[in-house]
Image (tube, rainbow, N blue to C red; front, top):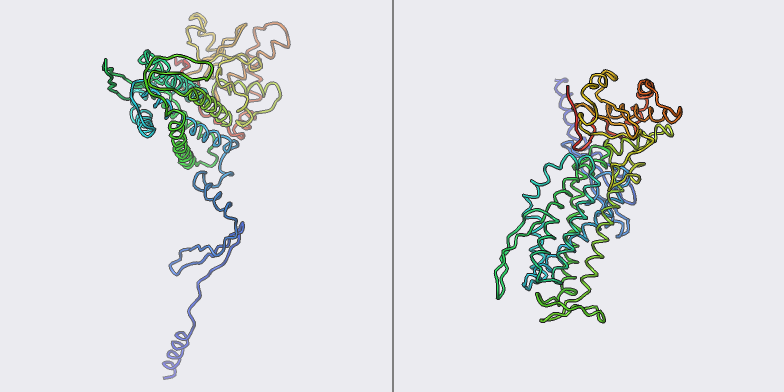
Length: 474
């Protein structure tokens, strides 16, 4: 009986115990108080208790969370903010220009579009019919990987040139087909077929637009990759496209406003007479405001400037001929290895093929039969038997040809040999038969620490992007 009584007493005491309170605590960070609590099922719940931040700060942080990658600014490489600022400005001006150019084309064709109609047609032309443009650009992919900044700038220059011709088309309506065709050829992808009718004739106009847009899209991934610091490429891409969409919409709104105010007096095809006194172009059926010929070029200049600054801000960390030559030149001259951020403002974005003397004036990618005579092919191969490159050291430059499976490390080894050989020639002031071998020995002695520091700086050495450069295989 005593045992049974003890068991009953223990059960009674356990029933009278108060229930365990959930574990919770409050954390205060940046004027925000949050309560953290473990639920009975083990899950952690978070509840905001107090937020003493000013309203402007809350809006700004909400914007950053929506349009910037998680962990910004620590999750991206240097230059991302400047890149984003000019990218937003670029999309804003491009969208405004697209509305103005489309309305000008329709006016020159004899139509009377409203700003809303011009905007709708602009969307169709830009986003709806770029299939042929993708086919045209497909064989340029390797060159875009090698020089994404250069191709992006050229694409936007080409696009603005075509847009400028479209904006000027109302000034010469009797040459409408020629001007519109040339302008759209500059953009170069089949888009839409319009039937344009007036009293005297029926014109079938094929508008070509999109190659520039496709080229711009093809270069996005290398640019975004250069900013991905923690493997967050998808997050970068998603937030970057969100910013692009936001400022495209804002730019379309600005374009509609400009089309409604500045361009509303455009009345279509007529005989043109220039009157310098009041800076207007007089037409039979009304006046074309000369302001459009000021606004469109201004937007175009801002657009191109934004693209150039946007590309200069991107620290691309892949090896191509220009960046490899600059890295080698800095190392041979100063012993220092430059990071992608160090080189971004020194890159020649329009003419990247220039030869750098301190890097050995290396030309890469020429055909094997242009560089080496067949009788000396075996001699060149045996000079660096274990390497995946051939070097022909000439008086004006050094040709380097890579094997088909050569990596960025192989290109760096060949480039260092050429740079050391050129430096030795300048010191002794006379050519030597063994100078390449001496340079090769010096390269082998310095390459391991050179490569380790290069990779520590953030450079990708697993591949070498030489565009359409020729390679060989025995």
